[in-house]
Amino acid sequence: DGGITQSPKYLFRKEGQNVTLSCEQNLNHDAMYWYRQDPGQGLRLIYYSQIVNDFQKGDIAEGYSVSREKKESFPLTVTSAQKNPTAFYLCASSISGGGSQPQHFGDGTRLSIL
Amino acid sequence: LAKTTQPISMDSYEGQEVNITCSHNNIATNDYITWYQQFPSQGPRFIIQGYKTKVTNEVASLFIPADRKSSTLSLPRVSLSDTAVYYCLVGDSGNTPLVFGKGTRLSVIA
Image (tube, chains in turn cyan, brown):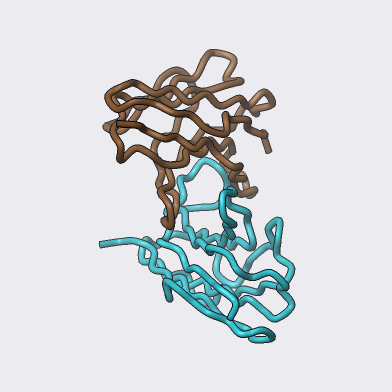
């Protein structure tokens, strides 16, 4: 089946560590996105990429980094500069960027600080 | 981007029809209206999308008046499993991604 796979489902980080969240899609979508969701809140956009080897900052990019070396992969690194990383992280993809194409989401990664 | 306003929460009994209205007063000519559903600890799921008038699929209906300044998601005969957060988003095919607000938390009661 086509879809988006996020791994791991749960992730724990020690203070000062960088961690990388994986996101893979086999939908042949050009655009991919990373969101952060805090309890009881909506989704906030971290980074998005509309094409391979290109990406743009979203509303809350500070303390995060991404790469888009392959069409199917869009990993997110939570760096030690992100002071409050505990959250639910969601990856999504769409056929193309913009607001008219529905986004398909993964099942998320829940990151916690030890 | 057109900003959207939705009720924070709604309650309904099983078997009732639920209508969630979203206000988007500054919607642009090329903007589409899209609704998503999110269950706890899962990613949002696309429900329905429309541009004008009425759209219906196997899950819901979307009513859009002529001025397009609002839209209403209609869920027929809800069940307990429809308890979720529902997001209304407005955007076009340009390069700017959609913005998710806090959505409407629907609680279905037996």
